[in-house]
Image (tube, rainbow, N blue to C red; front, side, top):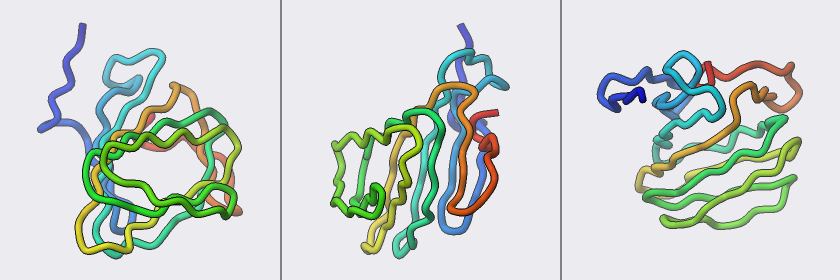
Length: 124
């Protein structure tokens, strides 16, 4: 059973958001990808979707989640279930960072608004 050390897990930064890849095929997972996400204060939303369901657990901070253009507040302790093929974004207009853990099936493809499908680096 592999143990992925958080301190040595790969990180990826997109804008004001840092992703730490925990479980993924390149790190021994065969069915589920997991990553920790740090969203800096003042981060604007980036609309995207996945072809599979995504589950996000908010660990600390708060944000505004948007599902197909409908906004909802989220806070620490909340779980966000994003259905497959749903346009989703998360904004952190607040003064404190937002920390989350995201879970997605291996093989899921992401699509940024108006873009082509791709495998996110956290899922490789």
